[in-house]
Image 1 (cartoon, rainbow, N blue to C red):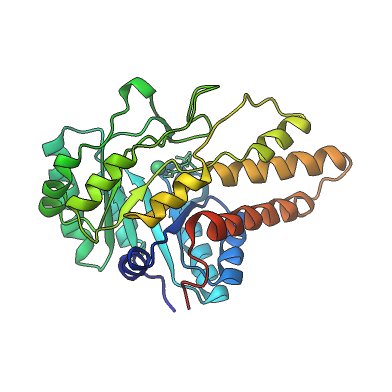
Image 2: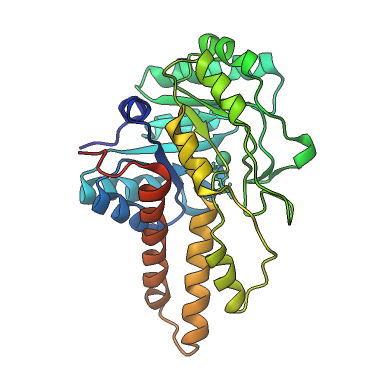
Amino acid sequence: MPLVNTIEMFKKAYAGGYAIGAFNVNNMEIVQGITEAARELNSPVILQVSAGARKYANPVYLKKMVEAAVEVTELPLALHLDHGADFEICKSCIDGGFTSVMIDGSHHAYEDNVALTRKVVEYAHQFNVTVEGELGQLAGIEDDVNVSAENASFTDPAQVQDFVERTGVDSLAIAIGTSHGAYKFKPGQKPQLRFDILEEVGKRLPNFPIVLHGASSVMPEYVKMINEYGGAMPDAIGIPEDMLRQAAKMAVCKINVDSDIRLAMTASIRKYLMENPSHFDPRQYLSPARAAVKEIVSHKLKTVLGSVAAAL
Ligand code: G3H
Ligand code: 13P
Ligand code: ZN
């Protein structure tokens, strides 16, 4: 089975009331942990690569590792560019064999976002590569861009139909209150998402796949473990799992998770090294770290996404 684009995955997810997990990958252990969980549970997944991941690992390595995962798992896996900032990075990923790209024009003026997204779609569709666009702006940190909560803006449902029709995108990321990173809400603040916006978007775009970025739940057990083993993380609040489940039953077909994987790995490595201070073989601490990635991804596939057995 070759790498796939997102068309079939999203069609089935929409009809089935579940979502596909889109997990960020940066190294071999992360790719293995995610895809081993997906294989055991027969779940399709999207492996996504940010500009930062490309810089860290070299896109050729990332692509070959994801291809290895396809060979080992025989699962429908998509290789996706996360937050493509311009046409050039999207083109480079399409030319390099990615099956899906995101062009993130959300910080541009509306008409500029339409024109840029349209240009990427025209190029991508020639190669059967699917395109995700974005309307509205999430708060938080992604690569070097830090959007403050004040500068974040919810998606305007009145724009979505026009945007999708004029750009030809295959899926649309919207802003309904999620944000990137581990600190999504202020201490003491009750997490809330604008389900009214999601519902309205769903009505205006029937059967169209919606994407939620910034959807880590920031599992408190990992933050606690990091701090128990020498870390110093302030309290962090993520998106409650029941809200994500609710979104997956609505129009949301892709849920992006990165921070939860980072936390799980870091907690595991801290614990291992604190408990085994004389060890220095990276395989010794990366094995439990990889197992921690597998565990958190299994949990997401079962509890949050509902995509178990969807690859059958
Ligand atoms: O949305 C951002 C993702 O968490 C990727 O993060 O740009 O630090 O690789 P990164
Ligand atoms: P988190 O920081 O909530 O994991 O979001 C990741 C993301 O949206 C990647 O595009
Ligand atoms: Zn994102």
